[in-house]
Length: 212
Image (cartoon, rainbow, N blue to C red):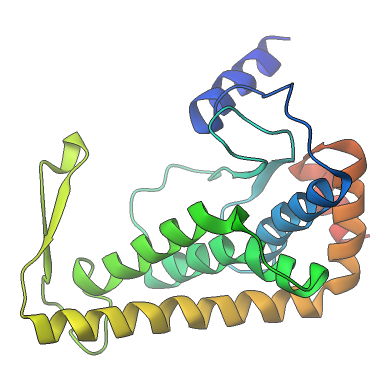
């Protein structure tokens, strides 16, 4: 009982309260199921990705129609380039699943796109993970612990090159996500149907079905 209350409290912080009066059409509900399983599947099929803890398609007051919760097994203070690329691929996994399973894309990936772009840009401008620019700070962040305002510290020409590299980074990880989805399409269908029927599943349930 205490555990379930604690988990719900964490979820409220992450995604808001359950929006019990939100009614999705059957098609929307199935698309959201594919979207969330896409995130989970891409995460599970990559090395150095945080384990999937929970997947739900219960709408939340934050506006989220569902979400996939990943939780690091140990304290984690540093992220490698590979880990960040994996996170970007995982963010794009929902859109990839929609495109492959449904044959169209929706507005449901808007926050994923924002987060993936933000990470890719940080790799180039702040983390020194760009082959083109190397260990050069191209962006400065003020009041980092108060939300932070970022401003580019480079020429307009360099800003254009940054944009090109960010686009290329996200595209590359999106292609990787689509490849993972295609290689595991039967499991995608099976898991999406299971989530559609149950609305919420644990990471353990997800992994059991994935490996069955």
